[in-house]
Image (cartoon, rainbow over all chains, first blue to last red):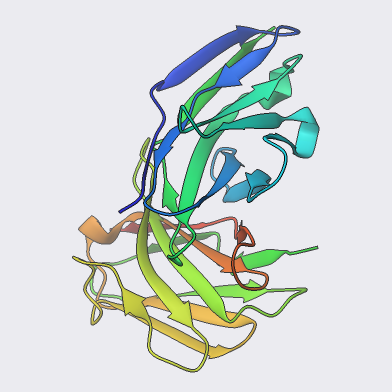
Length: 113
Length: 116
């Protein structure tokens, strides 16, 4: 069965600094990996996905993520954080042989002005 | 594109009431929709997978008679919480996939259900 881990409950970054939100995964087949963002009392917004191809994936709002097969990681990154990036971020994985997405527990990102 | 609308956003009702939540894909057809429940400061818990024209597939531990799911068309799935009680209070979120594997799911804005 697939699983995903977000080791940090909260990440604090000063505005303008680079940010990283960590994610590691476990699947039996080929992974499909996703990042979503959630603002208070809202659903999840899709940021980016990795299916195949280039390990560096670029997504919405300047975010990108790097797929690392050997480390089974898919960390979310942004070169320069904005205060408006403050939100709850979810990493998710789906096994290529399964229909269900499994979400990590989420990481709350605080961008300090 | 790929907009999912969920209605209502907020529901407050008395214990014993049944509550229906609608999930619509506005600009695409969704053969599969998903219903999640999210507790405060926790991740999303998949409740069931809703397939158009067939019975929903429920996750282990989710009562199918309590949480009735209907997916009558390619753009609409409904979740009915029957005889709701305070412990059913939660944030319910639906999602729909635009196409088959491996397209991402697109989420509604959620429904906050409060049972008094």
